[in-house]
Image (cartoon, rainbow over the protein chains, first blue to last red):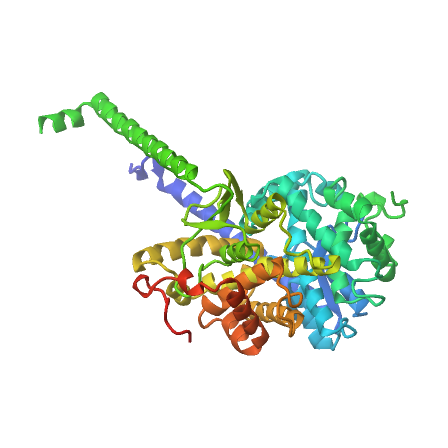
Length: 296
Length: 297
């Protein structure tokens, strides 16, 4: 009787089984991806016309988003009175970023690029009352907030606190395990960006200078450039709101609440103006949120 | 031959031989490191007192440095009339950054931290004529230049075709090839982590134009950033824009500064004439691949 051939003790039959299993898994993965794409395409066909579909992560416990950029973009949509709906998902854009948006079938990512796209598409200009010089200053402050102050927040939340407050701030949407995994990735990113190479003490000093500059420029004005809000207020609000409501115990919170009270007043003013339904935009107690509860 | 056969056949002897070589190599490495540290400590003892030793990479072909931060720092030292000497080296600071300084035995890195350190140590304040609001605006523009415009320049220099970048590096062709390749790998990763590296070329071009327009509009017809007197913020704006003009041939940065925003070009030349009267002596000689003494295009 002929015996089956073997290669280092593994029979042909074993190899066929393993090969079949691998091929089966690969086919299942392809089928699953195709099915997801099919469902995605079906869903996109139901998007209303002339309405922005804002793709962002879910609501937070104390704040509509624990990330500054969705908050910035949503504040802009409200300020410019552009019709929109939210799609809360962890799906990233093609650049691996969130938030992003879809408008009449066209996808755009990066919060500022979304705003520029809508300004051009819909003829919106929330900065039309500003002089050219004011626009140049506003641009500089937007960069200060989004490309510098933002990173001090990233370091505080993910490196110094190791994401410890994120599960609570997200209402449990981000698990402690996920927070730890994200925290491990963020450290090297912050090092590559540059701010992560400084000591914690140096970063706190950098933070103070940024917040001081914002507070000094705002002064006693209602909004960044006077009585009328502008596009730049959206990005500053998006970031400062994090300091107030999703970074408990952080130097950011202490500075915004106690050392620079005009910033705290400003954040509340923008919230009252553009987020009268703030309470409906945070999680309910059953979902781990504070909707309906008195603010501390 | 007998020894070779013995070594090959005798396993314990082979192991002893290999471990002996490894230990010997390790000892040599430790000895070289200690010797280098000894020489380095000797060199540091010779640093003059009350003089800043500015550690930076070497001079460039058409510009005192192919990096904006050494130019910023050196412009500040000249502006504040602080005695300094240059030590051209590729040795980075403990944070892996350059430039950095040594002052009376104390090392400080990061160009802005060096300036803050010297301001505090020597009671210098090149911004004393500015109002609080002007200082806050200046701070915002400094961040725009150093944490945004800088990354657009890194993108243009390292994210795509490296021909232009290689042409301005002040090294021999072989060193050039290795260094640029090594830096490209690191900088591309930095660009991705920072965010600029995730944009398309068209998107980055839009960002470049927005940043330079903001600078040009704010500067307007003023001599310096905040009027007829220079201030600390001029050092960092000059450092970055000088690179756009003299170190990024064929780039959008160069085109915009040269043609679309002529007030920025005039401003760069003005700062250079004011604080770098010896500019020509601070670039490489023709024999070293530089343009010293040659007429500017």
